[in-house]
Image (tube, rainbow, N blue to C red; front, top):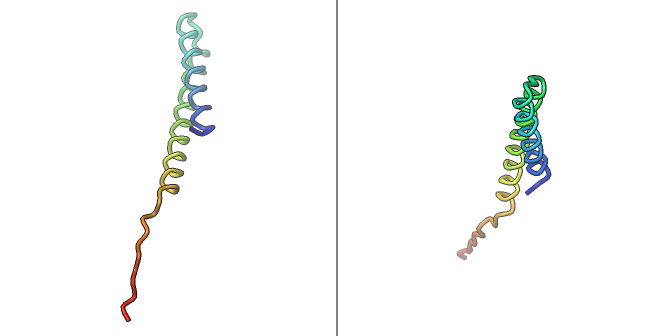
Length: 71
């Protein structure tokens, strides 16, 4: 797991908390900030997953192909 995924998860949780607090208190600006932070977190999480997938693809062994010469 990379930094983007960790940061994304944190932003999603904090954003969710802000959104719910805004709903409970009737504070629309807080709700909007929470929704925006959740969206930012989801984007960061997706970016992190993409980076992880690329890294894993690059780390996979590239099956060695032996060629033999016929003289």
